[in-house]
Image (cartoon, rainbow, N blue to C red; front, top):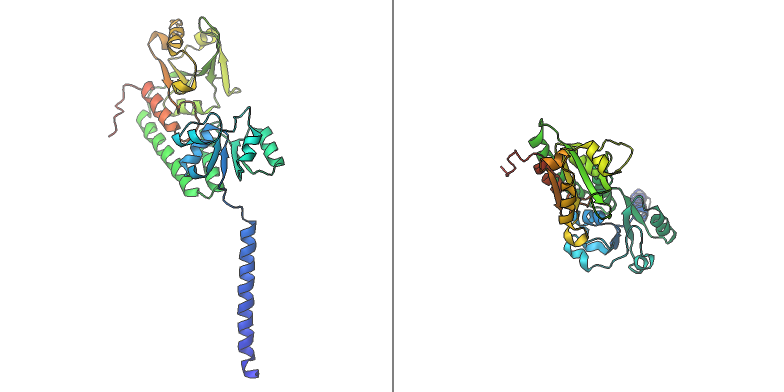
Amino acid sequence: MRRFWPLLMIVLIVVLALIFRQDKSSAQSMNEPSVPTRIISIAPSITEMAFAIGLGDNIVGVSDYCDYPAEVETLPKVGGFINPNIEAIVSLKPDLVMLHSSNTKLISKLDQLGIKSLATDSSNLATIKASILSMGDYTKRHQQAQNVIDKMERQIALIHDKIKGLPAPSVLLVMGHSKNSGKKSTIFVAGQTDFYNDLITLAGGKNAFKNKSLKIGTLSTEGILTLNPDIIIDVFPEPDDHNYDIEKVKQQWQSLSQVNAVKNDRVYIIEEDYATIPGPRLYLLLAQIAKLFHPELNWQPS
């Protein structure tokens, strides 16, 4: 028996090491967060990000305002930023709710209900990219998220190379209008910290609205005349998603004939489903406004 004792000791050590390793591996697995499979999105931009990184099959509910891509139209709706339907959210049994970081009341309510949430931000281009990467990290889709960022950056680089060194026109980007009848009254414009401001700069322009403390500015007719922009870009979502009379909007702009943009026929209406969504399709809007800023360039693909 003494002859076999060293051999038995070696076997025992190996067996104990394997057991310890297995227990350690099991403990790590239990501590690692599971990948969510039932996800709810509470914003159109978040929904687009989720589908872009391949989470479409995991989305079980979306906000009332989500309609892209087409697959979301058949998904259950759970309210919006202002009026989230808690009962509808709970009934879908999500293991993750993705929402905007400023939606603090809903984040707190979900925490009380034991529902995990992932807060994102789409204030500007940098936070949009960071949100896509954060979503990819949380759902174990790191490479898919990086691919989306790479595609956006390639498109941005193409436009930057195209407009580099050209004069920068003064641009007023309008995000909304007051509903007052008659001549143009108050408008809402992109401030210096908004993602639209990033697009203006990347497209080769400069924001005519200089106030750095406001994300969204408001202007009266007198304010527009004072800024006197070279170009006005007036953005709307797709026709089904707003109730503005575009022809009336055009007529209202024409009443400001002293403004350079109006005088030189450089007021542009953009009416697209991606125009108001700070998500992965922003490069489409960037390309569109860059062509409006610099129509003298050859924009045909080489």
